[in-house]
Structures are given as C-alpha cells and as structure tokens.
Length: 263
Ligand SMILES: NC(=O)c1ccc[n+]([C@@H]2O[C@H](COP(=O)([O-])OP(=O)(O)OC[C@H]3O[C@@H](n4cnc5c(N)ncnc54)[C@H](OP(=O)(O)O)[C@@H]3O)[C@@H](O)[C@H]2O)c1
Image 1 (tube, rainbow, N blue to C red):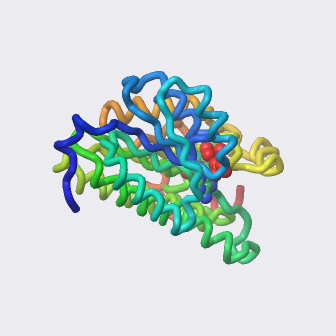
Image 2 (cartoon, rainbow, N blue to C red; image 1 turned 90 degrees about the vertical axis):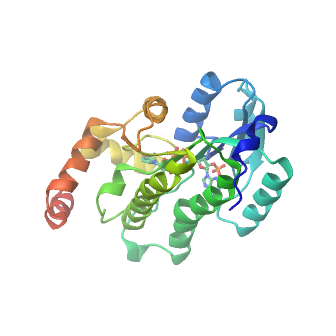
C-alpha cells in the first residue's frame, strides 16, 4: 500500500461520513460542521440522494453528496475512481452506516442476513481499505459499533455478532496504524430512537427494561468526538453500557444469556 500522507498539504482535506443523513451519522456530521476547520470538505454517503441533499443544504462546510448503496460492489468501483481522481487528504473516516435485523434467526430471510453482513461488516472493511492510502499522520478513523458488541444477543444474533466483529477489528487496526500516526476509535452506544428502529420496535423498546438506557444521538456524537480528540480507542457512551461491558468481562456468558432470556 502506497503511503500518500506526506503530500497532504497540497491536497483537499476531506472527512468521509457514511450514513450521514439520519440518526447518529447526522448528529456526528452536524457537530463536525461546527468544529472542523472550514477548508475541510465533507463527503457524505447514504442511499437516498434527496434526503442527503436536503441535509447537506443545512451545513456550512463544502459538501459532496455521494448517494451510494454501500452493499453494492459497484459502489466501491465508483469510490475507487473518486479517490484516484480527487487524491484527497482524508483526515477523518467515519464508518457509521449500519442496520439491524431483529427476531429469531430462523424467522429471517437469508437475503436480510446477507444485507446486514454487507453493510455492517463488508462495507466498513472495503471503505477503510480504500480510504487508508489517502490517510496520513494525524488523521482519524471511527467505527460505530454498539453495546451489542459486548454480548451475544438472542433475537438480535447476527447484528450483535456484526458489532462484535467491528469492535475486534477496530481495536486491532488501532494497534496496526499507530506507527503511521493514524488514530482509530470504536464507539459503542446504547439504543437510540432513530430510523434504525420501526415505530413498532420503538414502542416495544419503550416498554422494555432497555428504555432506561436509551441515549440521545447528539449526546452520543458529543461524547464520541470528545473521546476521539483524547485518542481513546474505545468509547462506551452510557453508564449502563459500561456496566454491561463490565458484566460481560466478569461473568460467564452462559449466565448472562440466561438473564437476557429471562428478561
Ligand atoms: N439506533 C440505535 O439504537 C443504535 C445503537 C447502537 C449502535 N447503532 C449503530 O449506529 C449506526 C447508525 O445508526 P442510526 O441509529 O443512526 O441509524 P439510522 O437513523 O437508520 O441511519 C442509518 C444511516 O445509514 C444510511 N444507510 C442505510 N443503509 C445504507 C446502505 N446500504 N448504504 C449506504 N447508506 C446506508 C441511511 O441512509 P439511507 O437509508 O438513505 O441509505 C442513514 O443515513 C449503525 O451502525 C447502528 O448499528 C445504532
């Protein structure tokens, strides 16, 4: 992999954010819009062009609306062309776009499992690998995992496993990239009432014990970016998330799974 970091001064500085049009991605982008130097261009990725364009209109930074579906192979051909053509100095890559798939594994379609793995895992690896040659010392990578990464979750099995993958991958990559001066952070939020959930799922969430841990995406974005500034490798944005992480470290997984099932 060719290192292009030294040439960063002459190249356009960019921050790439996936899933920027909604929920946590939008909260992170709005906050970055208030805090990043004005010469940084924001490259925003999501599928719905109109929604992304409307969102970008409210930002003060120069933006590039990239209406791509990250589950499609062709997207990565397009992105490769874009990186090669623009030769940007990628200062920040936020791998945020993700989706859930709830219910028992057997009740779900195979296509849903594939789409989840494509977006939550494959796309994050592919985009990271494409962006890294354009990142140099002082740049940062953020992976959005979840508190679900700490424990297997019956009823949310593939999702929790995809987030455990990202947590493990992000932490290992952080060590690998230290010698290049590239910072890596993984953030693990609790449930947030975003478009990630259908209105039915939101209602169910508000009735379950999980309601006590619900977080506001703006607060998650603030805590996450603050932790990145302090070069934290892992940020768990809620007290209950920290408790779950501790329990997952100290208690046998079998016991915790029994408790989850009982709840
Ligand atoms: N909400 C929660 O409770 C929660 C908790 C912990 C962690 N997380 C994680 O936080 C991240 C953001 O979730 P969120 O709650 O903000 O979800 P959200 O409100 O549903 O936003 C998802 C974003 O990703 C984009 N997106 C979805 N599928 C895509 C695809 N195939 N290609 C490109 N972009 C795509 C969506 O735009 P388009 O639909 O236009 O593509 C949207 O901008 C996810 O990784 C999620 O797993 C969420």
